[in-house]
Image (cartoon, rainbow, N blue to C red; front, side):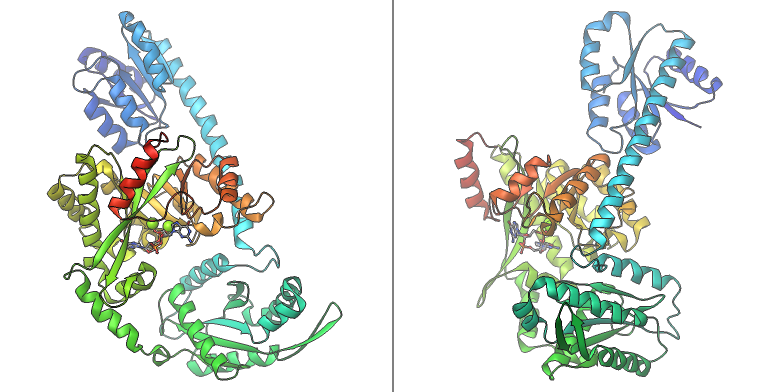
Length: 574
Ligand code: C2E
Ligand code: MG
Ligand code: MG
């Protein structure tokens, strides 16, 4: 049954309309003022809204413009109810994006026919939209799931397959070997025979590996020179050792391809699920560590990962100890990188990126200490510090007359802690910052761990007025059917899709598919890591208007950022 929300302060009209709608077979709900109407529109997700213009508290314009700013309510068909003498203002509402209007008093038939027209129109648009998303998705999957030069499945297939395998897996009796394999002569062959030849060789290698990955397993290309395998479950470590040995032997020997006869050997590392790690990223990391160990021992062999391989280096231990003091000793800094609209030249916000000013080592990059912080749990106080500091900075700018929304990265661990929204509210309140000036950036891996809880948390954060970005899009699970259920506002397209964009590249097709998809899902897209004029031009051609990257500015200290913004104001920026 279609649900219709009636927002009308006049009780008699409201009751009459509700009665008419129920009789006509609609589920009708009502609000007696605009504020309540907005709440109901958000909470009840009606199929259509009938809304009076003149109301106390929040009038029809207010309702419409509030709903339009929220991607979950922006598309709901909106019909205005107006009195005869409000004609002049009608134009304004229609311009704001209302779909139709009815002048009071209206007849039953007028009302029902206006509703039917809008519902039909909406349905047609929805069908078209779903079709567009599906098409874009199919194209995207095709492009993104296979390595274009060899047609070998890539990391995303590996991830999917791993998830699938876990559904039928018995942890008490089975182990899943995840392997990383490298050809010992790859670099040399690449140098002497070229990339195309190596692509062919890898294809032949994959063909030879296929029987091992049969059925439940898979072979994928991780990067130019590394292959990864998920092997069918085994019952013991010894069984895994035997399979690994078999693979190394199978590849040992000659391959004859395009007039060349090459001899290869390989090094392989294997990590066992669930013994060595519980997620694919750590399994791959551990398998890689084992593979390098095999290589260091002279190659043509395999190693099964054991926790001792990655004994903590002295350096790492020092870093870990240091990080524990970094927050208390005031060694953390935030740098801010602008996001800019290339059509208007305006800076629309900044991303806060943490830096560690190490007393001996100088600036340490987050790429180095964030993973360490995540492993040790120090990410929680760290993220909390970043949130507080970023909110304070946004407030300082606001008081100086600069309205700059600040985006903060939240680690998966922080996001999945109970009571997150409450802690964020506390921080916002203690600083006195308007929530609309805060954005949170989350990666796919943070939200897919527990989708139901994640959706509820995201909705809570959104209800506070905070914007939500999906960070590094394309590097995670990329399960796009998932995407639609998470109430994100912004899609940050990872730098790997932006890098080296040229008109005929596969990257250009991908970016265009992603942008189309973002548009049909009502998400604002931001391209990350834009460095060159050529990349910018490609983005411009694909109608991507918001970018972040060295082309415009690296992350800067607040003072330097202010200087930059002020310098640009002269050029009509901000
Ligand atoms: P991210 O959120 O995707 O941030 C963007 C990264 O790309 C930043 O690296 C930024 O300096 C870099 N970048 C920006 N423009 C360009 C460009 O044109 N070219 C290139 N090559 N790189 C560019 P950074 O600052 O090293 O941060 C790395 C990652 O560390 C971030 O990725 C984010 O995931 C994490 N991180 C940074 N600060 C925080 C934080 O406060 N909390 C948490 N939880 N994570 C953080
Ligand atoms: Mg980010
Ligand atoms: Mg990012």
